[in-house]
Image (cartoon, rainbow, N blue to C red; front, side, top):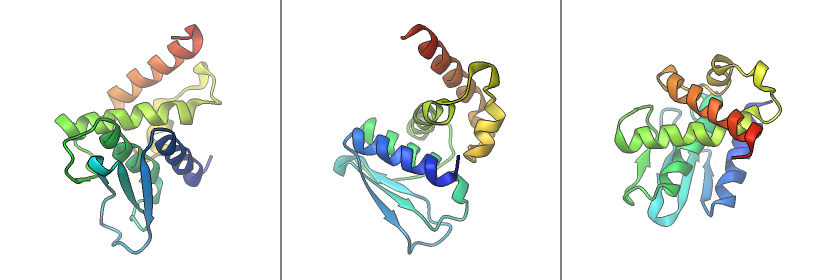
Length: 142
């Protein structure tokens, strides 16, 4: 799958959860994506220097909106602390079913997942848990 595929799937997820989005093409390559939970809108910097991370950034910003984080503007951060940490974990939870949809459990590989979506390895433990939960739910229907 391509980077565009994963980003498009996250944007479909956003729309299905009443989150509006803007794709910004004129921002600096170092400007992070952002969200405004109060307005239920995210802005994705399509000029970001790490194109492979756009799906993760979009999922992160979508989680801020879904979590109804305090209504301030949030800039993407790889932090694991409080609000940002919850958005990072939520991003993983959004991306796991998209990425692993056509992958059998025996072939699931957390390192390939993190590498493919340029997700920081600080999220390794959460990714493992999310992947395990995904396959459990897929197998047992929970």
